[in-house]
Image (cartoon, rainbow, N blue to C red):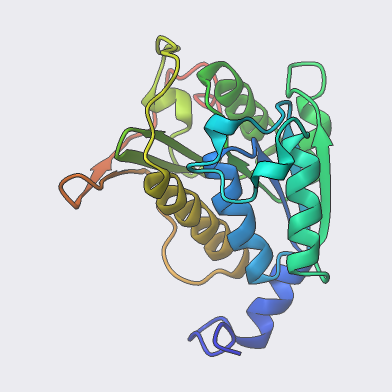
Length: 235
């Protein structure tokens, strides 16, 4: 009952979590950490979507997978493990790529979307769709020992395209320390929990930069761009 003892959460907040549904889009380092935190918190329904299978290079940071899972679809492995971890949570694993043809099917029926992607093309697509359906979008990105977090609440603050107007160059493979994936994924889960239950302050309009090399935390105010092609017309 430690979670129920949190001021302003209690039984009422726990019931809100139980009724909520969250899409975790990408079950890599970020998605593993966020989904296990959400399942542990008692989210009622989790949709896990990923197009990849487990590879050896994943195991330093993607904490839901083991050596015996190599070659298996990440979404299906993660769904089975989370279901065994908390049988009260409905978990659906979808072994599929998110693209323009199917993104609305994934987004429109959930309450929140958590960004576990490793490319900005899909991130921008999710951001655009979340703005269209007025769904909160919790973005995070990691590189080396650094992570960044931006919570998008359509109509109340900037979206991802306000922060990053153009697609950054894709560098492969991206160096990542496993610890930063767990830190940022857990922060994404915390933002989702706060949105659902109404406790605490959600980081709308703030880019949080976490540097594990120096242990610095930097909060940068981000304003909404009235000319943003995605959210500029929202009221």
